[in-house]
Amino acid sequence: MSVIPVLEADVLRRQDPELAEILLGELERQSTTLQLIAAENFTSPAVLAALGSPLANKYAEGYPGARHHGGCEIVDVAERVAVDRAKALFGAEHANVQAHSGSSAVLAAYAALLRPGDTVLALGLPYGGHLTHGSPANFSGRWFDFVGYRVDAETGLIDYQQVRSLARTHRPKAIVCGSIAYPRHIDYAFFREVADEVGAYLIADAAHPIGLVAGGAAPNPVPYADVVCATTHKVLRGPRGGMLLCRSELAERVDRAVFPFTQGGAQMHTIAAKAVAFGEAATPAFTAYAHQVVANARVLAAGLAAEGLVVTTGGTDTHLITADPLPLGVDGRAARGQLAAAGMVLDCCALPHGDSRGLRLGTAAVTTQGMGEGEMAGIAALMAGVLRGRVDARRARDEVRDLVGGFLPYPG
Ligand SMILES: *Cc1c(COP(=O)(O)O)cnc(C)c1O
Image (cartoon, rainbow, N blue to C red; front, side, top):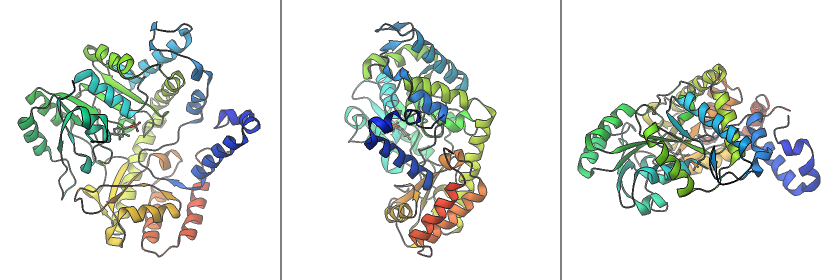
């Protein structure tokens, strides 16, 4: 099966060479450079096949058995399978798999539990909170009164005592835990305890670690949070999309918050692809993958630290690393550009101490490609070589191309 099913039939190439070339160009980019963006991964050909299937044609507002459109008997089965697999995978009483994205899942969680003007306690944006955790540029910051907790400037760890004291002072209606950049496990039991103490809902935004949870390589927020929001396309390796997990008693509120409150018709091709991904994530091979992702990240973090970068929190428990390259003479923004020119694609991010920007990277995609600890050590050395100016961009690009050539994301 081709990784781009429409190209297999050569339909797109014949009908629209312009777009066919763009799709193949992106496949080429992904096959010749290193994808180190912490939020990215390579979906399987089976997931891509579901995404490119005729389920894309089907309108299906509502939920299985209660749709606003006819002809839903097949897609209803697809959604029921996706829901059942998600519930089993995460030990949840209820799953909603219709959220179009991680942000849509967070929006729905707020819609289910809050009213505009309510106070919400979440990790501050400068410390790794997501836009949906109170950015003034996002609906969340406009419609709710967000109070931000921080990570400790020295250790980079969540300041749990501050979480407790801010909760006592501000009496939030909800507390959000989850981050775009936190490399360590989150103490969900602590957040539950604080939420109970002040009578708040606990929302876990597990967009990043949910794939590690599926593979048993990170703690599961489901037993602690009232609502868990997640993406399906990060470490979980499914299609681009979101989901929500909760107890039965909140099921109806969560479902109604997704549809009809914040979304219209469900994307049935994506939901089928989520079902495929949940099926893959339930296998021993995925458990091994999730643990390898973490082992790789630990080696990569240690390699970067040995090269002189300052790794936030001194390492990682997850797939995600943030590091300050300033000791090598460049800040995160410049470093990202130099590394991109060398074929290594990653992000820059805010750092706990806040003066300059750092680098944010992850091992989900390279681990899917089959790379292991040896390759991670080599990547750390190559990154440092580029940032120190010892390896020029062209030579680094050739090295990257050779490396990735041995671990093609979509062989053939
Ligand atoms: C990625 C992420 C999101 C948003 O996911 P999108 O699918 O890009 O909308 C939300 N919250 C956190 C913590 C994330 O890491």
